[in-house]
Image (cartoon, rainbow, N blue to C red; front, top):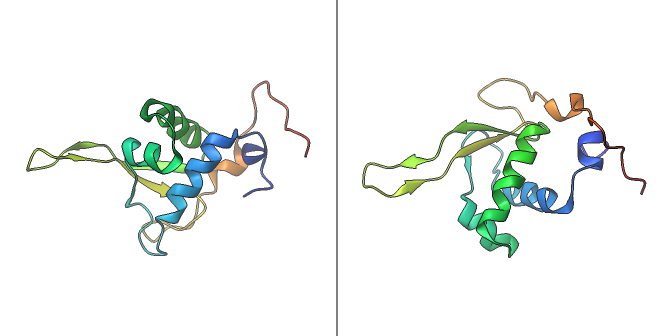
Length: 112
């Protein structure tokens, strides 16, 4: 995954968010991973509005896929969106690894 063009050109903020999402993966809960914007912002020590773009960036590059939308639960308490890691199998299907087919539109990979 880290050798992909999608990862090589990914800014540090979305990379840190991906690590936070991956920390919640237990080996059997892919597709049911949840991390609210508020909790992500607190874990990464940034403003809540900052992480929204990072979630979108990870989705656009194929690292995560949203499996459930955020909503109000039966008791009126908000429920966070759920995600699947695209590098891991989900619901009995093999990993899609969508990030491997991502191509930069006008960016070139950073040299390390």
